[in-house]
Structure formats: C-alpha cells, structure tokens
Length: 103
Image (tube, rainbow, N blue to C red):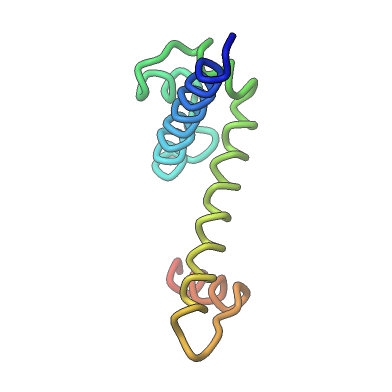
C-alpha cells in the first residue's frame, strides 16, 4: 500500500468517524444515553450497526467520544473569547452561567 492510498483511507476513516460522532451527539441531545442506540446512529449515517462498532465497540464509548468533543468545543470557545475580550473568562465561570441558563 503506497502512502497516498493510506492517507486517503485515513481521511475516509476520520470523516466517517466524525459523521458518527455528530449523529450520535444529536441523538444524545434529544434522547440521552439510554435513548441512544448504535442502530439509530448507524441508520442516521447510512451504515449498518456493525459498521459503527468498527469505530466504537460499545454505545458508552461513543457517548464518551461525544462528550469529549463537546468539552473540546467548549474549551475552544472559551479560548477564542479570551483572545478577543479584555476581561478573561474562566471555564468555571462559563459553567456557572450555563448552569443558570439551564434551570
């Protein structure tokens, strides 16, 4: 296998994995962990369930990947805000704000 083929395969793998995480995150937001099934996630990205388990062995692994992605995005938003604002915003303060909004 030449390097170009390996790179293309890696790109396809990463794109599919990202699509699975995005689909699962949407389902998690609507139904929670108990309401999410690998079959539902697979159907939403036009795969069969065993294809999803190639990327994530268990539903819990996929849920963790979704939560970690959310934390990464939250962290990126805080960092971006801190670059543009004179007053720095701590993640702790943001979580307090989010908690108040969620009530």
